[in-house]
Amino acid sequence: MATQSLQIFCNWLASTALSQKIQTTEWIIPATQCVHIVAVAAVVTSALMLDLRLFGVRWQNQTLAYVTHRFAPVIWWALPVLLASGAVLIIAEPARALRNPVFLLKMALLLGAVLTTLACQLPLRKNAGFWELSQGRRRAAQILAAISLPFWVGIVFAGRWIAYVQV
Amino acid sequence: MLDSLLKYLEDANFATAIREGSVLFPWIECVHVLALTLVIGSIAVVDLRLMGVTSRDRGVAEITAGVLPVTWTAFGFAVVTGFLLFSSNATTYGGNAFFRIKMLLLVLAGVNMGLYHLVISRGAENWQTAEATPTRARIAGAVSLFLWLGIIAAGRWIGFTINAPA
Image (cartoon, rainbow over the protein chains, first blue to last red):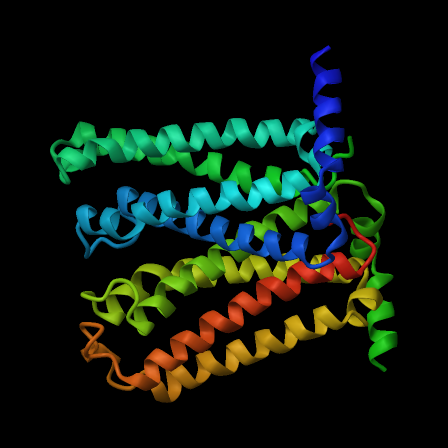
């Protein structure tokens, strides 16, 4: 029943004028994918830089407050760009994503990535030194960083696999 | 000459395995995409600083120390995975206009980087702020960013102009 409604929705969306316009204009889908990839690059690189600082592998000569100030906003600015460009791709080919189990996996991974990133960054809003006040907190931040990285990697991998899993 | 070389590469055992297997190509492509996002993302951090857009109050040397090891590691992965993907259909990719454009842009990015290291970056240890960064460095940063965006675009268009899942 639910799958049937989803199929009807996908068929309707694909038949709309907007979807038809995107489908029949050759350059829109690859151009939108380029925007999507550049926004992914911004998010993944920023997340990695923050995590490397928490691990003490890179940016040791900069305070955590500075590295957070430099890279955290990039993540939150790029996410809306990802959602918007992703929405264009879904409107163009609704069933390719919405009926694809890999797409659902990607969204679950995105939720995990956003939650761990929030858990890492929200405490810093009140106190930029929050994760450096004790050895225990330093550890906790490193664990959060270690959990968030596989989520971002999984998002990139799932994104590519959507093209290979046929529905 | 080039054609027979590409054919030879395409017929290699590993290239055949990637072409004929159902999961090797996508998995290698996953690593390629992850690597290139880190390459362009980390290079952009340096380029945007050179251009005076971000990290304006930090020295160029501090920024490059933070990101360049990531850039080079990721670039290594991108080259190896890119070569493997290319080998699986070397004759097709070799004849693809966007693949050729991508290789040309990569060479230009390399030339820009070489110029930066050899000539433009002279005195870079004194570029402590955006204001102290000379125009020639700002231009090199903008050229680099522009070329890398072109490399991404050309790469994506390869997928739409040869017979492969987009």
